[in-house]
Length: 344
Image (cartoon, rainbow, N blue to C red; front, top):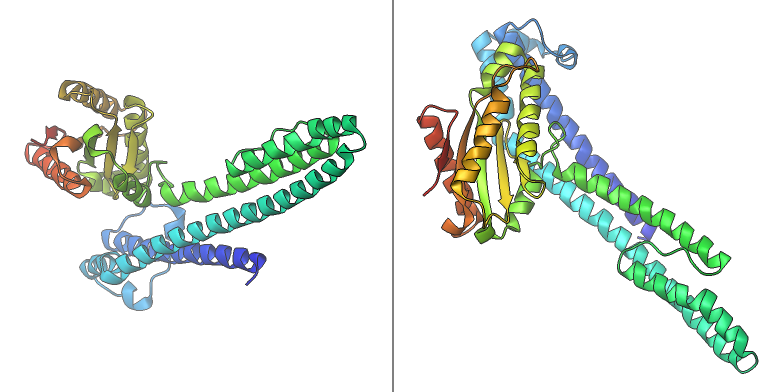
């Protein structure tokens, strides 16, 4: 299979993964429609109004419709399908990155061959005209050698030297920027939550696997009684609540700290380079978060969070870190919600 066919196949695989994701979303929409019918809601997004129930499902009682909805999104097949989509996305992105690297390697090899030919010609001409050697080296060889180094370092080429080389460098730089933009776009979509802009589960797992435990704190946030926002105010308001939670957390913490949405209303914040951060400082930031989330000037109802906090130096690995943060968060729930607990 040549490079073009491999590239086409890689993007077909990625498209298949995206199509599977759409199919999974259709299942979730169908389940939402069942809940709407069961609860008798009259106001809901237009996209759900277009979902048509199977006649057999339409005849079910409200309780049976709720049970049917739960079966659709809480079964082994659903979670297997979801995991398969994530795996397909990761494999497809990895293949696209590999193909891009193969193309760059092939271009580097071709460019180096051309350099060797140019050098041989210059050595012959050196016997005749020293000035031509100096001029050619100044305008052609040095820029090309620098370009090879820049390509190997995955950097754009400096557009200097002869007109021809500047044209070549400009053409390469355009291709480099386009490829980089495509890869970054694919990478961002695969690792970030579309609704809130926080890292998604894939991004969270990557961060968790690369943590420096002794220099990291984990904070596990859970939105208290989130179901009430959806049931009382509608799913659009529920979405706005999640977006507000992420925006407020981003505003309070540093740019280096990483926010992840790992569940419907569950978030993790990794406090990086946390050696100098004490509990009192964390508590002050949490108070600021609480104040901002309780402010309803934006028309949203007050939002409350239950929070569990654990220091990486107190656990053996990243898996235990999450377990301890989860324990601390549930202690907060038990203590009356809207509070934070430090694992110790």
